[in-house]
Image (cartoon, rainbow, N blue to C red; front, side, top):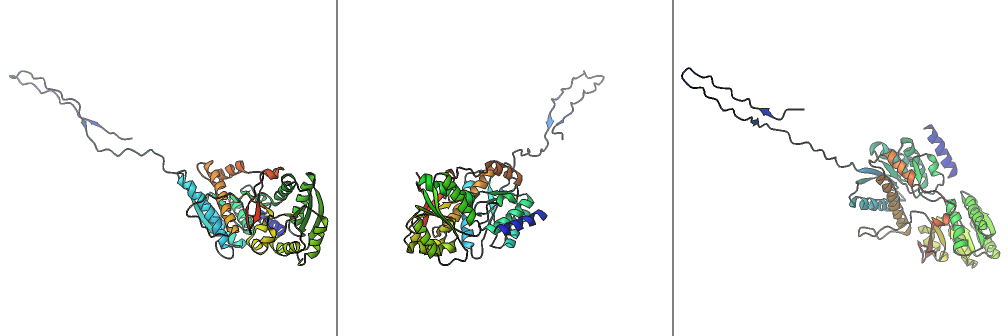
Length: 393
């Protein structure tokens, strides 16, 4: 992903009237020789009525609705995720419009899963729909491409699902509202030591992608807080037998295991840990909360903790809210809701709406990664095969 992201960034570099008439007074009558002079009566000045135009309406015209584009995969394999994201965003817009403030219209665009589709969707929102801001998308690579296009055209894009840490470096019009994965790893270490008083950690991570960086971020923070990393071991992407690794974890006697692995690795690693009775607390990456992992090995992950991105805010219940959503779809609906709320709050600070005014407002509201990650990072816990917010004291 880093290589693809770098290539994409390199490509981006190339790229008045009178209203009244007065009646004249009657003149004096000329006297005759025999008749005494008679003084004529002078009539009063009488205005002559004239048809006038209706008074001008000086009241200001109603404000033009703001327009927000929503990028999401609305067709193909991830269409249900995209629809959930869009539904959450629409609920936030409906609440906004019901309050009687300046109206906002959402414009949906299908980013699919391919970069070129995301490029075309973002270009349509900017050039044809003239949106004031863009929200989305759900998948990382389409989001990167859409962000490059929005930045080139000077339209702010807010991403609150894609996990690419360097997304905001594309340009000043791109805003990444998801805490970085490295910040989440540090927060996981803080949760273990400060929140749960766990002082001996084993770290098992994939030797690809950002696995090593996440393991390092967790381990450094864990040690800085007084904990001890008793085992830190990578595994190759091609690993299918996790038995030796599970035995080494067991022999290290940790009280917490940090596993920033993807779904494919978890489907093989978790059963191996269970088979060797490695009954310790587990903290993992957001991949542990996917439907596939929960459905297959959720029982063996009971009580495991994973970082919840900012998007895991609760959506107010409405009678129109769909009830048959998977946990992932529910999280993405929450993402659409909270992401739209972020954009709408920026719109409220920028009358009249314009892309540049929204950008300035978003800059002012942008949160930064602080060293006290635990204060901002929320967590989910796996319970009965589902994820739910972790309640911390």
